[in-house]
Image 1 (cartoon, helix red, strand yellow):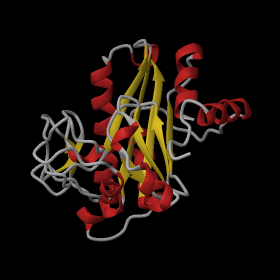
Image 2 (cartoon, rainbow, N blue to C red):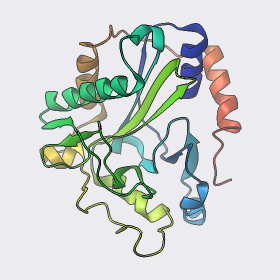
Image 3 (spheres, rainbow, N blue to C red):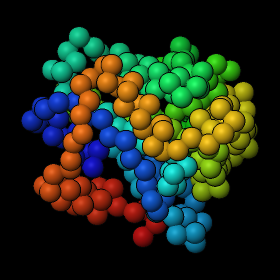
Length: 245
């Protein structure tokens, strides 16, 4: 669906679109710049977990039901003409950090990178401009996608608890020495629940983000159109097919 909305923004414009959603049942996704060879497809099949590419970049993420909240922001360049793609990326992430602060997480935007880019998981490294906790732990995994520079899209995942770390069970670890193969390394990641010491629901996190984004864009409820749903179904069966089949 994110790709459908992204294409619409490119060809038709329209207001910026913010999607907050979950996957139930869960899914393991990887950025379009990665190879499916990083995934342990046999284990995913055995546990009946779907795997697919996503339209944005980034490493593997595991999104299971209420354990995480997914975020997608899409707009045409004309709507944010004063921003470069990179500046728009930082604006979105600052807004997500503000949403986290609204529920008590001491979150801000990183000004440097950490970790090795060969890491196959999204939370195994921290990029410049990403959302982190005060202690430097990564709180939001995201990637960019844009069509010829004219339509901006960022999609990502906010872990609400530590279930996201299970992603390591489903990736093929490179030869020893390339990276430590752990999420609790010097570029540690964390979840909203771990930072607060208690579980936050999808509804609570969604409300905080809607309030934060309302300070940047006009936010009002929207609906997925029948034509958009049909296009998304075709893409799911082709470009974003289940890699375990």
